[in-house]
Every structure is written in C-alpha cells, then in structure tokens.
Amino acid sequence: RVPPLHARVHTPAHVVRSSADPTARIFQAFSPRTDVTMAAMRAPQHSTLTTVASRSSEFSRNTLGNSRVVAGARGRRPVRTGAFTVRAGPASDTVKIEFEIKQKLRYGEQLVVCGNSNKMGRWNPNDGVHLKWSDGDVWKGSVEVPAGGYVEYKLAIKKKHGQPAYWEKRRNRIVQLYEGGTTIVAKGIFGRDVDLKKKDDKMDKNVKVSFNIHRKIMYGHEVCIVGSAKEFGGWNVDRAFPLKWSEGDVWKGEVEMTPGGVAEYKMLTRRIRTGGEIKHEFRRDFKRLVQLYSSGSTVQVTGEFKGLVDIRTKGGSSGKKEEKKEEKKEE
Image 1 (cartoon, rainbow, N blue to C red):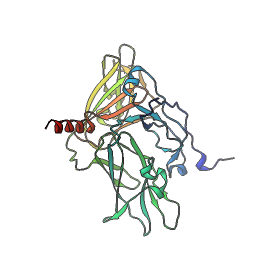
Image 2 (cartoon, rainbow, N blue to C red; image 1 turned 180 degrees about the vertical axis):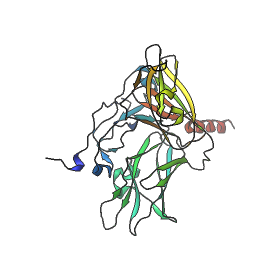
Image 3 (cartoon, one colour; image 1 turned 180 degrees about the horizontal axis):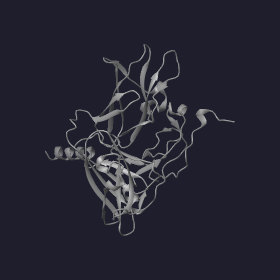
Image 4 (tube, one colour; image 1 turned 135 degrees about the vertical axis):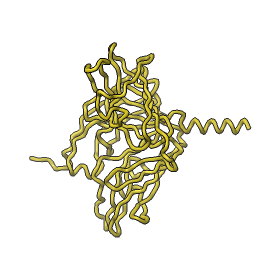
C-alpha cells in the first residue's frame, strides 16, 4: 500500500540542545536534510522536535550560554540550512521588514507573507501580513519583529471565495535579524529570489565576516571555510579559506565580501600539506549561511565546529545607543 503524498516526508532525528537560562531568547536550528515530495513542497513543511546535534564544551558554554536552541514545536521549518543563533539584543529592539514583491494576480486575489512568528500569522494565511497592491503589480507591506533571532517565511496567494491559498514552490525563506533598530527591505518576485538590504543603504562598502571557531585537532591540520562565495573557494576545497590557530584551540579569520545576497558555507579540517586528508563537519548536502545585507559592518560568526554558531554584528546598534545616552548625561 502506497502512503498519500503529504505523508511521504522523511526527517532524520537529531539531538536537541537547550540552555537552562529562563530569560534567554528562543532560537531555532534545523535538520540538515529532509526528503520531500512535490506535494509537500507547496506548503511550509511540518516537523517534530528536531535539530542539528551540537557538542558541549567550555568555549560554547561561555560564548553561547545566553542563547537557547530548540526546534520548532511541531511547526514548519526550512531544510538544508545551517544551525545558528543570532545576537539577542535588548528586548526593546525591533527590526522592521518592508516587502516589495512583484506578482500579477487576478481580481479578488491577495498576496500574503506567512511565517513562524506571531506577527506573520504562524503559517496561517488568514493571519499573515497582507500586502497591498501598487503600480506595476508590486505588492507592498511591512512588519516589525523582535531583534536577536531570525524569521522564516513564505509567500502565498489568497484565493477568493475561501479557496485554499497557493504557496510558492520553494524552500522557506530566512531573514537573520542580527542588527536591532534597522529596516530591512525584501524586494523580489513571487517564487523567485528576494534580495535583502538595509533601507537607504547604498551598498557601497564591503561586509567583513569574522570567524571564531573552536576545534581541537591534531598537529599539522587546519580548520577552513568552504562555500559558495569566491572568498570561500566556490565550493572548491583546494581554495577554501583557512583559519589561523589561537589560544584555547580557537581558529580565527576575517574576510571582506561584496554586500548583498547570502553566502552559504560549511567548515572542514584538512592537512596543511596539499593533497591531505579532508573531513567535512557534516554530510555534503548540509550548508550553513550568513546574510550580507548590512554594508560597512563586521558580522561575527562564533561557535563550535560541528555545532551551533552565534551570529552578531561587531559593535552592534545596542552599544551605539548606550554610548549616545552616556554622552547626553555628560552634557
């Protein structure tokens, strides 16, 4: 007997890692792989409590101790994305996301943004962000979400007369919210790529990405970053970006990248000599990501090889606000 299409979804089980800190924000980490049918691709995918396994060490407890990672509680989630947390700034900090999506619809239909947050309807098209039509068949709308995390979402078309919504046929989208107090513009086409950038940002300055990865390995080996960007070797392990060892078995490196878009990457270890043994942190189809929408900033990636990483901007907006308050007091 063949099971129905919507039931043929296979998700491997992984370990859930959490912190005992009750004040910590809740983040999500995702399974590295999910095999889905075409029927399951149309709507955001359901999952049980699954997440990428993470190793515990003194380094990770010190650097990631204020972040708690759990999987989406029977919610939807993207697939083939990296496990990460994002800077948890002050609770008052929010990030505004403005959508500009081009799509020609029939009379009575409406474009909706649905996501995993309450502001985005918890994947219910009726409670999502309803965009408004403008000239050129561009649908516009905005939503404010708490900083220090990320949201995942998909676009859907609400049909008239109560018919089921039509979901775009692609993986769930992700917006990393590592800089509070900013406005991010998500501009693109329904079912295709959506570009992210800070509002009024000329995108004329490079983005620095700084890595601080903890890994204890044998003498004569090194930790490298390989990824989709040319700075990461374009997935060619021979051209991977090498990190340098520092005290505490922390491997460090910094690279400048062109602003805009998303850089996929993963970590690996290899012998320093050419042609040495190469070991990837996870299976080949597992990829991490970092978004480069904030030009002129430094994005810090700190964490464990084969584990969680924390993403934040160096000298973020929360620190700047505190400095301004101190200056006013002195005056």
